Image (cartoon, rainbow over all chains, first blue to last red; front, top):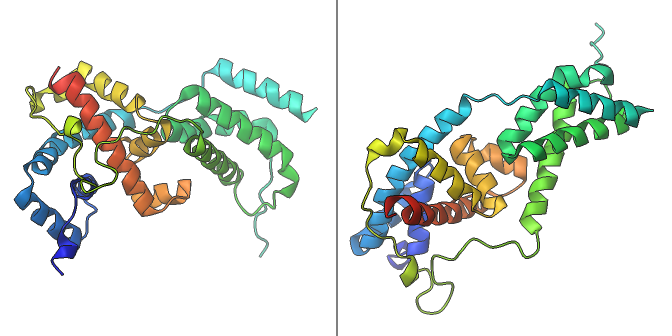
Length: 87
Length: 188
């Protein structure tokens, strides 16, 4: 039973990545905690991941403010092309 | 009571829907030229299949459903691109060390790990550069999840992938990004 709770660094960091979006299960959380008992590298990964998430979040905020539009020239070109296809 | 029947009027498509469709495409593919092509293809496909329009959905919904297929087609294309640089390995792939960190990829302490950098414009462009360095598929899914903040379920539905597939992609993208940021920002 305990063997099933043992995970590799690859799996541990995958869970950690998933946790950045708050989407891990309780079992995954337990597996991660157990892994941390023996692994300082993944613990460091997790700490650094939090900082990266903070930075990505900021990037997301900036991105959401942008509304992308086509220029009127681009629209004219599209209109012309549609006309050609229709005829 | 008669239900209102929707009709198509291709002459108005560009003025009424081009921006909406373009924005829809660009938040998914993050490339302006590509988004433009997808919108154009959507209009062409719409004209071609206009006779199949049954009037149940609104014109816009109908066009979006065509564009959705175009986005999936694009994802499939970048997913199967032969010779596409796979994301670099970070862990042993097999043998007794399977799943352990590769020695040269072990995370290092960061010299310059201050939260204060968050307002720094150079940091922002470095993040963009690192995301752009990912294989296209990883960049697309990472951006949709992390930068556009789509729900997991939504991405899975839109790209027709499973949740476990999504988390593998996110994991590979994030380990790769971490390494890129370590080399070019934190320990530069």
